[in-house]
Image (tube, rainbow, N blue to C red; front, side, top):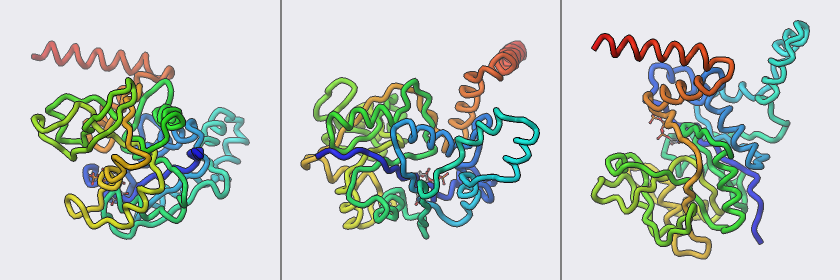
Length: 297
Ligand code: UTP
């Protein structure tokens, strides 16, 4: 029997070196797009998909992330006394029901696969989602919800897939497609960071997964894969051709790579422009900036 996906793992134990020096003292996941930290976007997406248990795989220096989901009684009392109900409402999204959130340590950054493996006892014997907070996705129907809906049809393991230009393939894991079913594809293989010539398709894997507990067994048995790290992709690839199989979902939405500086800036502009309270002022500024740059050329 198919089980509902109620648990999500958020691996947030990476070093975040691409954002040094900021990440020397601020967890990357706390960096803000407009006024909300990356982690809030990920949590909102998970909630929309029906997730009720949130498992964070953390490391040293991530206490700001743990504090973020706590109640803030002094702040709330101050807002209350000033009648700032809108702000109180906004803070409500940052609160977690007691027992809904768990933090587990990854003592060494041994890769994404290892980070997920660290959560194995909390996941138990059920399907689970993995969300990489670096990938922020603007979508009418949140990406994980699209995946959960597709998973309810197919079962199996599922990765979010995005079309990329051949010259970009080398930044991603790329799907080798056995069967194209429309928005879903059945996967025959996954090639990590292929050159444009070697890429088996234009479908790149991004940071959303729904996985069966067998992937945890595979991680258990795995030796260090590419780059000395334990790769999640390798553990998923072992399920290709198995009973459950692996599917890719061409999700509807725009993904921003907020783990890179350029992607973070692009997301900031896109989310800034999409905010009713900011769009007019911000778009006027951007238009003026572009015009003055054109005039200077
Ligand atoms: P990245 O490859 O982006 O690494 O990890 P990073 O450390 O976050 O960032 P850079 O490359 O040094 O700038 C992808 C995701 O996997 C998590 C990260 O926290 C991030 O969410 N991760 C990675 C872990 O939790 N543990 C690891 O050992 C590696």
